[in-house]
Image (cartoon, rainbow, N blue to C red; front, side):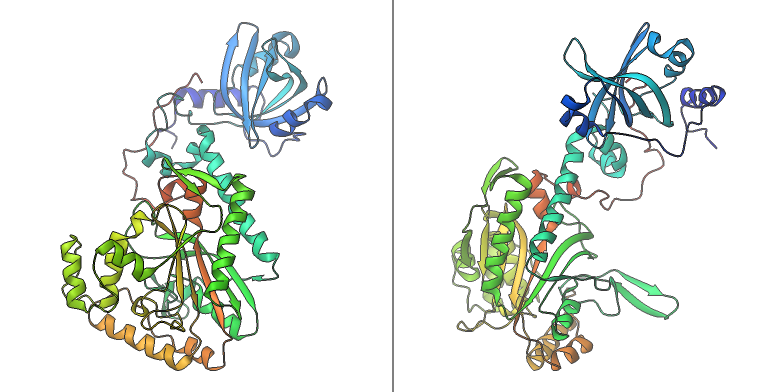
Length: 495
C-alpha cells in the first residue's frame, strides 16, 4: 500500500509514534503569522509567540539546530538548542525533516547575523510529510510538472504564490469597483439546455434525472440579459466559462470572465467604464499604470488608443475591404498566407484577416470599435454607419482583453440574426450561435436599451503578473492525462 513512499520517511513516521506523538494532530494554537511577527517585532521582542508552517530548510550543528518555517505570510527562522529543550526533546527535534509541518512556541529575538528568529521552547509535529520537497536547485523547473503538481509548485516557488495572490486581489478589486456602483452580482446556470452568448463549441453532458442533454455554458450573457428584462438595471457575474476548443498560451478550456450588463447605456458608456475599471485595478493591485509584459513596456494611463475595425484592417492589408465580397476577401487572405475554408463566409474571412494582420500588433491598450455585423449577432446596428455594429474590443500585448456591445434588444431583428447563424452552420461553420426561443420570448417582453461587457480576467492576470501563458495564472490548468511514470521531480532529503 505504501510501497511508493520513501523508506526513510516511513521509518521517521514510526519513530514519531514510538515517541508518543501523533504525527497528524487536530489543531494548533498559533498566535501570529510570520508577516505579523515581522510587522510587530518591536512589541513582540522577547515575548513568547507561537508560529506554525512547513519546514523548508534545516541545518544542525551539534547541540543546536536552525530551520526556516514557511507559512502564508512568508518564512521565519527558528532556533532549537539542546540546553533549552533537554536531551529527550532535542532528540525528537532531530526527527523533523524538510517538508514537515510544525508548530513552534518560543521567544522572538535577533541572532548575531541580525536575522529575526524564534527560540524554540516547545514544538509539535502537525503533519508528517511522506514525500520530500524538490531539490531547490534542480527541482521544480519542468513546467508540465509544475502545472500538474501545483501544490508542490506553491510550496517551493514564492513567485508563483505571489501570482495567485495578485490574481485574487484583481478579482476582489473588480467586485468592489462594480458593487460600489450599486450593481448586483448574480449567479446564472453553468448547466444550460441551450448554450449561447458567444460563438464557440460547447461541452455536452447528460442529466440522468431529466433524461436530457445539457451544455456547460460558453457565456452567461443571455441569462444576464433576461435579468435586465426582469427589472434589474445593472448585473454582473464573475463566471467560469467552458469552451471545447483548442489550447494555446491564451486559451484554456475553462476560464474566468467578468460579464456586466447595464440598462440605458450604450457601448460608449461601457468603453469609458472599462477604461476606468482597468486603470483602477492597475492602481490598486500594481500600484502603477505602467507594467512590463514579456519585455514590452505597457502603459495603462488613460485615455487608451482608439481605432475603427475597418480602418485598422485596411491599413494592415493594404486593400479596401469594407465592401469587399467573399471572393475578394479570400484572395487577400491568400496573398497574406492565411488559410481559410474554400466556402468560408464573409464574417469568417474578416475574422481570419483581422486576427492575423492586426491583433498581434496591438501592443499598447487599444480599443477597436465598430465591427462587421456578420461577426456580431447580438449587437445593435451602428446608428450612423452601414454594415457595422456598435461594438468594441480592447486589446493589449496582442491579446483581446474585453468585448462589449450596444445590446440588440429588438426581438424581430434578433430572430433574423439567429436564423442567419443557422444558415451559416448549415454551410459548415460550426462556431455559430444557436437560436434560443426562450431568450427571444424574454426580449418580446421588452428589454431596455443596454450595453454589455465581457472581460477575460485570466488574460488581465497574465498582464498584471507578466505571465507568458494562461496556465501560469490558473491554479489547475487543463492537462493531458498523466503518464504512469511521471510522479515526483528530483528531490533532496537534506533541505
